[in-house]
Image (cartoon, rainbow, N blue to C red):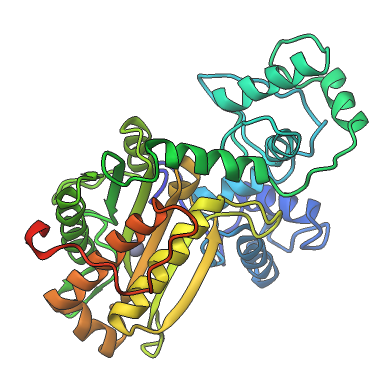
Length: 383
Ligand SMILES: [Zn+2]
């Protein structure tokens, strides 16, 4: 759930909204120049659906062939190239787009810290841009106009890959001297009563996620980590509220708990997701590291099938300023996974896995206890 006002549409839809989507897809070279029509109205036909799926896949969005709020916004953002328009910080309504992403990429490559390259022109990007302008003798106005574009083009880009960003993320995480005690973790139980997610056999994703999240919270508190849940048992905040909560709490790490579902009951296993773009390869380095840690700890402790770690650009991962991941701990639609998910042992194992991964994330890089061996002392366990 993203934007309550936006009504998703897909195959069979017709009218102006289809014309807009078709236009964006055509600009990306994904469909022919003119949409198919019925009467005189453009139609969302198979070719549009295929193109939307391709677009979603390449952008790290959920691939369903339907234009919901997230996909629509990504399509809107895809049309901007750096230099097409003047970019500036507008607090009331932040500018977003692929051009902002490109600006952030260039700032990071040159060593100016604009935070996560998320395609949103926020205060951090403005500050980094001002820094850049100061360093290159430009007028310091935090606005990316023709002069500043030119300055970027003049500068040979010698550093590639956003390493500076990764290093600053680590620096922030290790500010307490490699200790997890005193750090802040926000645990996000996916869904809620109004949008319970996958539901099979009387089990709902919202309830399972809440229960696992509460177990994680207790365990983290026991080892001195400040843990907060992003919603109460009966709460149902939207994604922006969840990520906003983590930002306000100044969390060091954010972990969202879900279980998966699929039309094919054979689909099973655990996967983790972190913020990243399959297009540019840019991603949150610590988010990826954390996602990999959680995945391997869950696999080691539960024997769920390993469905790997993937970059995604979901609002939840994009809107959070700290390393953020989403865990899909098994498939409710798979009979074997479902029987495990029902049990307290499984939920405890997933909770332990997340806690062990948090502990590892705060350990110095050279410290590496074998996977599955980090344990929270029994006397410290909350339950
Ligand atoms: Zn879910």
